[in-house]
Amino acid sequence: MSSPEIPGKSVSPWIGPEGLPAAAAERVRSWWERAERVYPPNTQKAWRSDWAVFLGFCGPRGECPLPAAPETVAAFVVHCKYLCRKPATVRRYLSTIAVAHRVAKLLNPCSDEAVQLELKGLTNVLNVRQRQARALGWAQIKEFLETAGESLPATRERALLCVAYDTMARRAELVALNVEDFEFLADGTGRALIRRSKADQAGEGNTAYMSRTTVRQLRLWLQAAEIAEGAAFRRVIGRGTGAANYQGSGAIGERLSVDAIAQAFKRVAKWIKMPAEEVAEISGHSIRVGATQDLLALNIDLASVMQAGRWKTNRMPMRYGENVLAARGGMARAAKTQGRDRE
Image 1 (cartoon, rainbow, N blue to C red):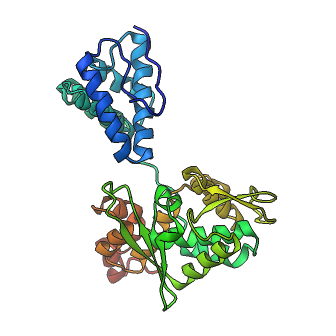
Image 2: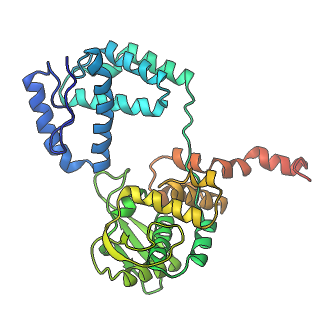
Image 3: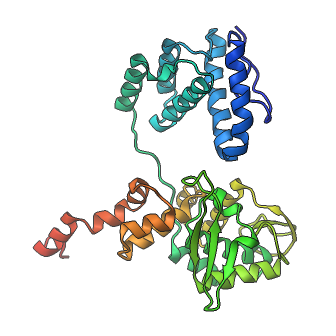
């Protein structure tokens, strides 16, 4: 059986496999029309990417991806093990496969014992620990604020860094901010409305605090770029904008893309002369990691950290701040009391 082509954006990623009953295909089409209006673009993109990986496995082997036999999915997990895919990545693949079958009202092959055993075997063989982005905390941001100069690219980056730090916004949340989402208060502080986030798919919104420093930097950028409405963070097109020296100026373009956030953070890391191996570890999550570590180092309680970062569980803030928490943990305190940490 030939592997089905990956359809365009307006078509469900799960339409096309041979053998899918007409009624099931119609259920998928109907569901996708609604899902496109509800789920964020990144989720839809992940589904497409994950399903393409599964199709790439099934096609050459003549296996049907929808409905998929449990043995096919179990073999897919084994295949992922040989490719050294992280367990978290494989679980995401399985989640996408499960969604496809649930939508079509077909039996979910991922819940079969054969698949679960292969998944357990995968976690026993591979390291489940995920790589953490290199932190960009306030110390690094402050160094950039003080040294980057007054060019238009540097002005944007200062505002971007400060807003990202205070709001602890994820990449998609950061680029989605509009001028209308900011409120500047009489005391010099501000508020930012995060209209939708990873943990708020319903779009109820969350309000984040902005310090006086952040408000000043944001206002300088909006004034310099002559942005009065719409997207707050936009491309700067022209001389010097792609270099890490922040020289030159340029025209204002469209809204920044999600991928542009990581590129901007890497340029900042290069500017403040972080080692090359650390720059390579900078990602769009780096300021979120750095802000978490800073808050925990200042003894801010975990509940407040979770509120600031819009987390529903403490798993990720604990992960981001594990080195800080280890230094404040029971054994660290005992070592100090017992004199084991004396020079």
